[in-house]
Length: 132
Ligand SMILES: [Fe+2]
Image (cartoon, rainbow, N blue to C red; front, top):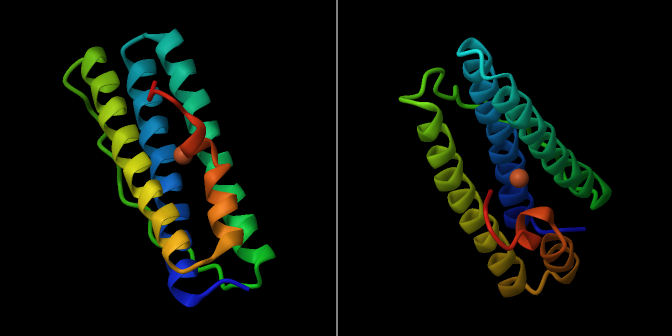
């Protein structure tokens, strides 16, 4: 069983992962609109990856006997200045989410929540050496 604060933060991370999925889906749609089918496909793959991240944490929360509380997913931007801007936004977004995840790992360590610390340390968010 995980603590209430950790559960809350994990719930927020699920939301951030779903937002990431939505963010990349929006970029995929915009790429498709521009006729950039390869970019559209790449962002669809990112969408799937982020959905998997969300579901992994979702399952962990439930496996720990904590309450899953789905939060509203923010609307992502639907237009971008250029294809380059989409990738620049991707880099900034990945750096932000990685920082948020690192803070979650730090919180788990501070709370001596070893299960969450190990779980989050093995997360794809943490194992990535460089953002895409
Ligand atoms: Fe992620």
